[in-house]
Figure 1 (tube, rainbow, N blue to C red):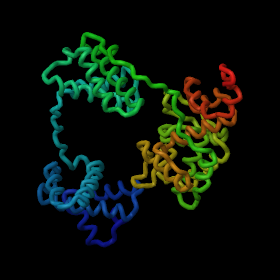
Figure 2: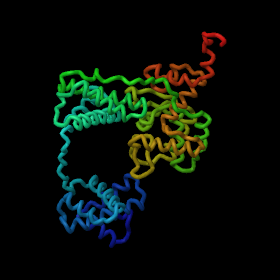
Figure 3: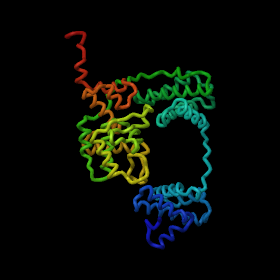
Figure 4: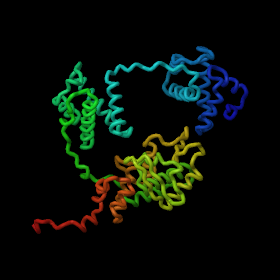
Length: 412
């Protein structure tokens, strides 16, 4: 497989020498399968070959110890080549793990690690929280423990009192700037205290001591765009490159179905019913699948993407990145960047909130303005409670004016 990237016999001989010489063809096939560009793959292979020759002088054909890797990385005097070499060696470890000796696990000196691990298991198994939600709650528990260890060193959690809890809550609220963060902070502390009682680390249910911060969920207006702005941004996307075709399909799907970022990333090719014009949305926030209708324009954009632009790789997921290694989007950031980039190119002025959820809010607002039944909007968005969808009713000022009652005080 190396012959696909290199042609000179001397270069091939040099690449196949060294501690990893026998694995270089597997590595070349690895980069080819992942869709790396030819020039990028050659750079990675050259970096691995340089390390291979270095390792051969240290351990020959024996498995490579972590000390050899560390010694090689220390030969670089600047960050850029060191980072590139470490990235290349990461590929070598994944392709040929048997050629490396795994370093012993680091000893964690944090005494609270077992407790936080148990707390994480509690959030997953007992409370059923999703990974992203667990991260926030776990961080809240960690911060509470840090405060307690700092202000009451040497004391066991059994000595925790209501006064301690109130002082910790006061400290966290002093660091919170918005009602949302204050509510989240108290909620996380409350959950952690419930866990302490549930797991037997404390004999009292101190979560009842945590005060509830005032937070009116329907007091604000959701961030949204005028539908003309959304339409203009979509129309501004060309159809000349695979990236353009993919991004247009992404924005149309988000803007016409209102699906969330994570739901879009979870869509697989088999989830699209091309004949019925529907897409099955899985891994939803409400933990239940739903079916969203596809407009003709959206279905055509998806078909164009699948037939003309989607990378030819063995992946069940619909949307893939074009940056090697070609793979599904692993997190929310790439999708949010696509949305922001295309909205800006369409001449739309963006505030602090600009991602997939902005298009979801915009669609819901547009449907309410069109006087669509509120339960129909709730079904499309996947809301379990119609009260959640009622947030968008506030923006329909013309309709609210029709049902508004006269001021009871009469004319002043």
